[in-house]
View 1 (cartoon, rainbow, N blue to C red):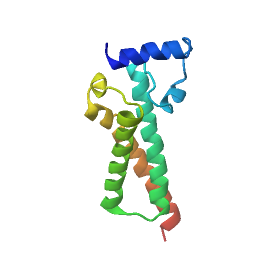
View 2 (cartoon, one colour):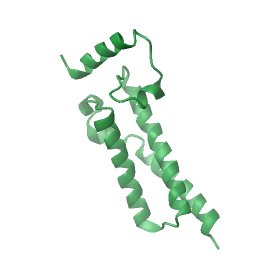
View 3 (cartoon, rainbow, N blue to C red):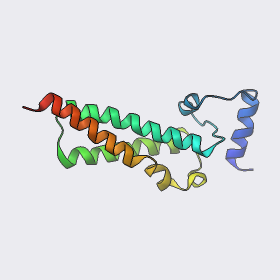
View 4 (cartoon, helix red, strand yellow):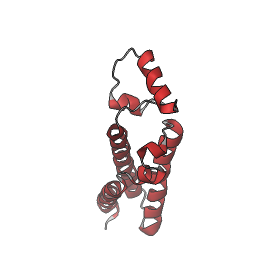
Length: 127
């Protein structure tokens, strides 16, 4: 029996068949995801939260240029990789591989990061 099936059976026994909310599963380690799209939605929205936070930080600390973009890409991909591989410990192949999970929602979070970074930088540091 695969580990994901064992975890599903154990979770039904532990919480008596009561369905957890998506956000409570997102912040609990080794959560069981019955639906693939539910976990992908969590990955997507966590990326957007990271993009807003880093955009504000980059705008307040007057970071410029390629260095800011490169650091954002590394942090964004790294945090999400640690989240799904270590914290949630999901089977990446079940979701199309590590690369599919790493790029889920990346471009929209990158665009959001740029908008927030530009707004904060311009508001605080433009002469």
